[in-house]
Image (cartoon, rainbow, N blue to C red):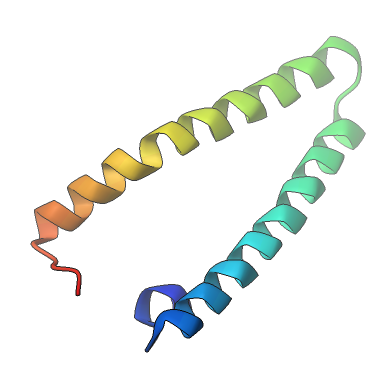
Length: 77
């Protein structure tokens, strides 16, 4: 929320840095949890599904975000 409502460039950049660091910590925890829970081929399948999900989310975030902003009629600046 801080990144979206930041009062200036410095606030937005700082909020995005914090978001990125937190995402890195969560990502490591998810992979560790998957490795603890699954064994053998199930582990490969679980990690593969996680990787595919992350890839699809990365590919769709910009077009969906743009469509959302355009659909709501938001103007930047």
